[in-house]
Image (cartoon, rainbow, N blue to C red; front, side):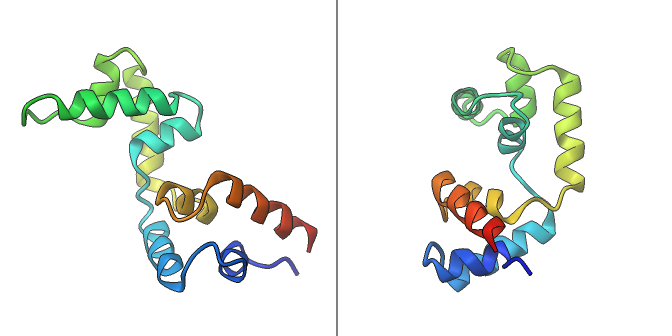
Length: 120
């Protein structure tokens, strides 16, 4: 039986039990940031997400959602935003990706654990 991803990252010392607990709690809530969903599906690059966040913050307190800012900058279409928002509402997410999103492990560490996990 293959080891669980969370057990492996703990065993390898990449995360603490508290970080795993937080990640699992967020995973169960199913709330990935919209920008990370768009990067995951190769709709936007991380650079575009960063530009969008900077644009969103430069609005001097004027509220604009991430999705609307990305549309305004021409990075995504309204249909892509709507699809990503639907995914955000319904997805529980993958623990390895969530740990990367939270900054608890690197993508390289995630990939190493996935390789190790499939070797069991």
